[in-house]
Length: 255
Image (tube, rainbow, N blue to C red):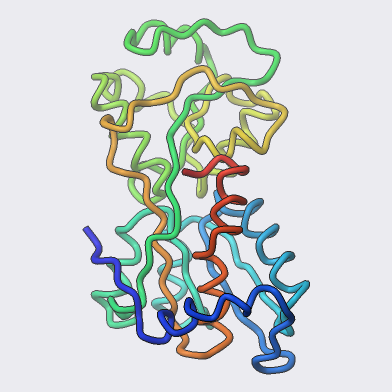
């Protein structure tokens, strides 16, 4: 479990609520590179747009699987911030000396769901392996890679908790990130997928047919770590922890 802390710089910034009511000019033309889990694409794009409207800063998001992004950062990719879909990859960067424990924050949380194409009439008995295999047929179950992608790791845990993993593990379409799994179901190239609730919320092409119990997998936490120590990064971090940002996260299906 990561220890979530607040740095003195962030504390001082949190005291200045006026930062968000007027335009902030920290460093003209400053650029912040945010490496973020692909499941954050829609909400983070919205938050970045809102922030740039009142701040003189260019924020460049780089989306992908948390494991892939973490490895890029470890190899020297120019990241100023990293938001992972699980704690494992932030802990990895901390152990490698890339991330500082004092700069890690609890950003948001999510749920895990089973989806099907919007027009599908699949009736799934969630605890019965034969029901899953019947629904999958000659196709595959779309999930993130279960050995690396956080959504896939959580999916494997939930399937194991229901004693389904052994039956389904040979019928998977593992993807490099959760948004690819979503796309496969949207296109009806996979009859079922396991993704985050937030992925299903932003798509009109899928339906949620089951929500896994929180107890069936590790808590789905999104830790955020600042890698570059600058006023611009600290101010954007403050915004991402603010009430308006929390409200936006809720609208996009995050907890």
